[in-house]
Image (cartoon, rainbow, N blue to C red; front, side, top):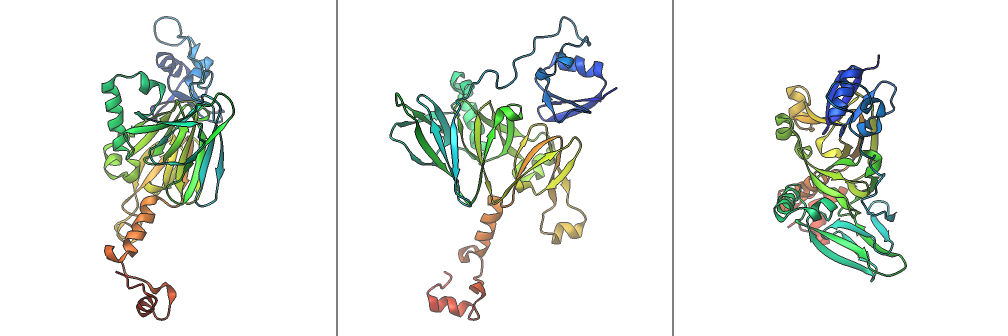
Length: 340
């Protein structure tokens, strides 16, 4: 008999026999489930074999909610990504369509695109919330390094398409992701969100384990992107996507994690012995990602690039290397670059 595994809010439990898994699924159908023979984790709401089973729990089985995407809550937008190392994305809006972005991300827009600043993330849940709830949500956004406000761009023309473009803040890659293809939720590194279709909710994701919170580095506080629309995430350098099988473990530098599905378990692990921790250059801990699920990794975290720039800057204590010139510092003085 197949053994079942369940996942709620990124926490995996199991294995369970069918009767136990079915009873838990009927009591709380908002999570994900997996068993041998399945290609990947699926929302419990899409597994009638669990929901319709005669398992424990009083009363008839609850009616399963419609799968994410059956009722489109976010605007459907078209886009094009331009560039190689310094990319920008151009979003094409039909009349009445909208997209959202972080403050300061816009590159250009059509004259028919109206720009409006909204308190919160412009999602349906945010707009229907009370002022206190909006204030709490905005405070959470501050923790992830984002602004209190979100900018909404709407095509107000009566006919014809209009474009608005958003530029990446530093060299890297823009990743387009459809949330409905990943169960309606993704966990992303803070400050990686660039723009999205209107209706996407931008929240906060805390690591629950104390050790992970203390030593998880950039993986401690992450963004939670929820909805059924397109989101655009920016990553530094080259991006690689890995599909982790159930139980598969991947060791990653904490700053190199861009995004992951909430079925992936994020934890930390000690690098090795004392010599490795002191002289290995990788710090004391690295991230341990446990599948199943999808992860996106970046080759150049902004913190690493900023650290190298600061270390090389004279005002930060750095020393000019001479760029390979046989004259070294003397060559810099002759050329006018005195290093101060």
